[in-house]
Each structure stands twice: as C-alpha cells, then as structure tokens.
Length: 140
Image (cartoon, rainbow, N blue to C red; front, side):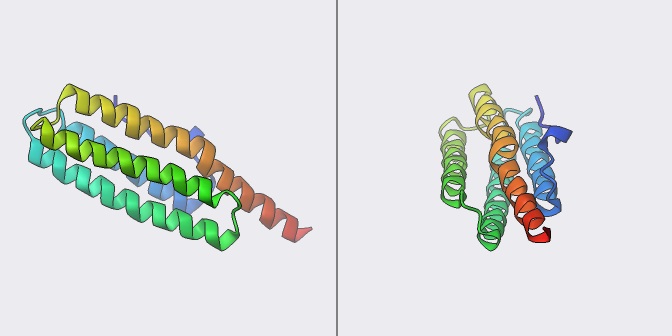
C-alpha cells in the first residue's frame, strides 16, 4: 500500500507540508522500486535518497522549532532519531537479504510510512499549533 498525503496530514505550515509531500513521494518511489524484488541497487539508491531527504527535512524542522522557541524540541529530536535508526536498519536489511524482500517492504510500510503519518499528525501538528498560538498571542 502506497503512502498518500491527505488533508489530515496538513499542518498549516507551507514549508513543512511541502516537505512532507516530498517525503511521501520518496517513500512511494522506494515502494515502487521494491516491486521488482531483484532490484537491490534501485532500492538502495532510493533508500539513500529517502535518507538524505529525511535528514534535510529533519534539520529544517528542528531549525524552525529553535527559531520559534518550541518547548518540545528535545522530544521531537528523539522521535527523529527513531526514524534515522529505522532507516539504518533498512539499509542493513537490504544488504543482508540481497534485495527488497517482503519483510523489507513490510518494514518500509510499517516503520517508515506509518511512523511518518503518526509523527505528522501528532508531533508536527503540535509545532504548527504552537506557532499559531504564539503568533496569535502577539497580536492581542
């Protein structure tokens, strides 16, 4: 099952929402590459690209949180470390299993796609809400 950017994933922050759309596209590209189970190099290339883009996105998100004085930054960073660890496990799995197996695809779906959905709906939305509340308080 592919990932989809739906209305319940919108945070209201243009930069973050745009990057989330891009991340979901990269997850889908990886899943498509896995349809040919013998395409280890294609899956590895897309996993590397996903890892690089995820790192870029996390750095942008964390810089934004620092800029607005978000009080949950440390916890948010810990959640980002979880996904980095998962991506490393996927790299190891891809190498050990000599290609994108059913277990690899399941891990991408469960531990990357589902993690991202949960993270956006909870952690990222709370950042956007914090910024909105902070900006609204400054107008009063």
